[in-house]
Image (cartoon, rainbow, N blue to C red; front, side, top):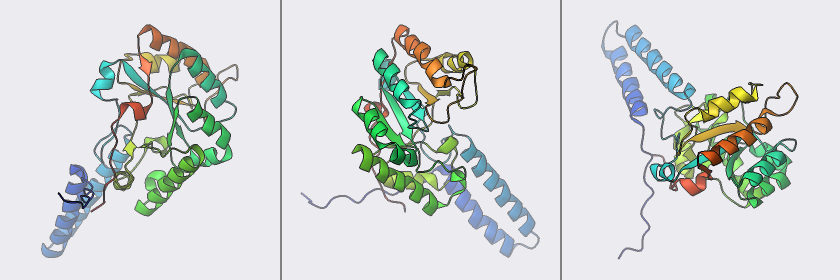
Length: 280
């Protein structure tokens, strides 16, 4: 029996990315070998880049690599959902969110900005101590994240991984891109680090919607086992009364989960591990 560990598998390049690389090579050959073909080849490359950009601007797209938009079928059959809460921790909002979750006996996954975790380390540790989990939402939530190259993305994600591990003692297994936007360089980084890309099934747009009733309706219309819901404790919009919208929505949302016999679980509890590999 061999005692040598198998080499980590190479990154499985998505078909769109593979086709894009092939087209770039073909366009270069055409431009050099066929008289008058250069403008057409360049136009094809531009259209290809437009397609890649569109795929990156579609948060739920799987064209650039795996993307978890729902829990596995086994979790859905058990009536499990995942309540995910982004952009914190926020000392003005997160403690009240934790109290509401505890009152209703539900678990949540907090996609935290690592820079905020550094600033509010005790609050991040409290999230974990109260039975929830902290996952990677980048180090600084840069607005230009989707424009970064492979080194820039790796630096943002790896720095966040280290900060979140140092503070909570747990290494994240999931990543959510800022605003859900990305480019073809992201999945190779996530694959090397063994991170799932997680988006959502439905979102409330609670960073800009000030009406809690409309946020709740977006989250609960057709709500069923397997859904991944998105709310925010950081950057939360305020209702007319000045209260964070998430705090107005959560009690009714959690009550609907109870009446529909849905249990909110953490992503680690529902997802299989994504084993780290190597980028070819």
